Image 1 (cartoon, rainbow, N blue to C red):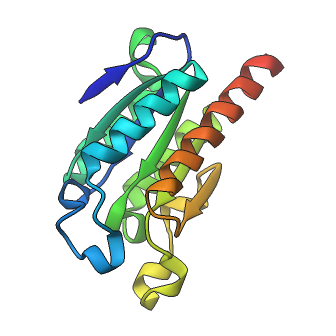
Image 2: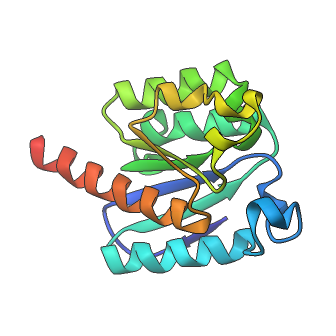
Length: 165
């Protein structure tokens, strides 16, 4: 877990199962950039945009669900302005994550789903993004840049939300 930047705008970035193996696992599909390198890029981007970024990774579906809920429903000091999530394989299978993301978005907090690979060019099981049904938006297929664009989108949506209040 890392926390950088000082701002009232806080964004949580969640990485799902097997993303801790980036840079080592299936480099032809996912590339050679590690999760730590992606997180460092996101933290620098957050500082540049005036947002504090916190990153977490878990292989556990239940832990990811709890963290998603924390974004909008945790204690006030634990809440976030938005969420970037790469649910990994859970994006294709998890009704629990779908429900958690839906609750956060219904609460008015932006959630952007990011995927490194071109999921719609993959096998049929991976083309269906169950969790994306509830997300504010989805960015996929651009490698690590997918995360950066998702972070940009969440920051813009969170600021827009704050202006509309």
